[in-house]
Image (cartoon, rainbow, N blue to C red):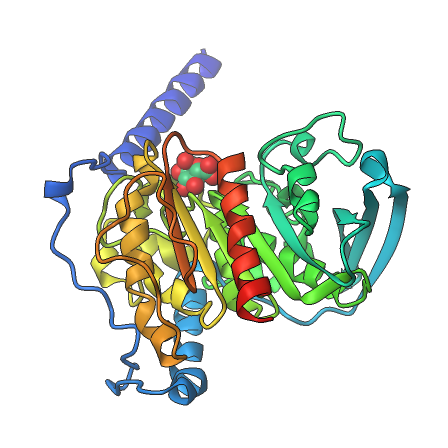
Length: 403
Ligand code: GCU
């Protein structure tokens, strides 16, 4: 009897909880005519109202101001200090991929407050490329099969053969090593090293932990003589693309940022309220962003930032953002507009973006630019088409522009 009553109470409470979540989460809008009028915060206007006019002013005041706003309101703090780090080559094959490639499986272990996290890095370095070699690193949130060091499974999500044949090293790590992608389990990883973060409303959460992991991979690259540490491209798709943006914004050692179909709280403008919304992402993935971000559910206009300001933090380093034509959830047009609105900061560095005024047509990439973009025909994914364009982009910046 008691059990039945208890069960009834629990069921009705969870129904109530579920319907209140539904009420919080608005229906997605896919109609361009229903995009509300919005005014983006001016990326060049500091909190005191002063307009930034030079690179120096940007770097001295406004850049840091925006970084803090993004930390406090969205992504959380990024702890930079730890007790120690060690690197162990757990497996190595200098003649992998029929002799073309040097494979290293590296265990990166980071210690803090008597705890440690272990990051498993898979790294392929082309044998015939001049050393040190530039590298791509993927933040992998999909199945580990995608980054199979044995190459029994090959996937276009991480097309290692294609990338090494183009003369680049390619590396990847899995987000689970840093923070499992689950609302209760994400605390098992980096957050054990920084438990105070969990108590803070502006503390680090899962996306921050993944970006932190990317920086530890960068720490390792400082020590690997095969890798050109000044030419490392950080790549992420979707939730991983939100993390690649945050990693590159935080860590200026990343030379190029690639953010593929990153959508809401990635490279799409929040104020357009098109496709996924802040209330939706915070409800479905409460562990991705900090507590403060929840106060902006259904209040996009009151955020002191929008995503163009995150993109602007990458300047003057090149950034490539993509969309997929059928991926309206991630707002292709809002992604393009986000890049456009970051242009003034690249201009401060004398860098002229080649992006047209209007969103380019499907499958017409704009690559020869500090800010690159394409809208690939098809669905939400990271494909060979995307990677081939990222290689062209890296070639353009690393080979033609700087040499
Ligand atoms: C969900 C989520 C997106 C995210 C995507 C992904 O669709 O709502 O914000 O980008 O998953 O990571 O694939």
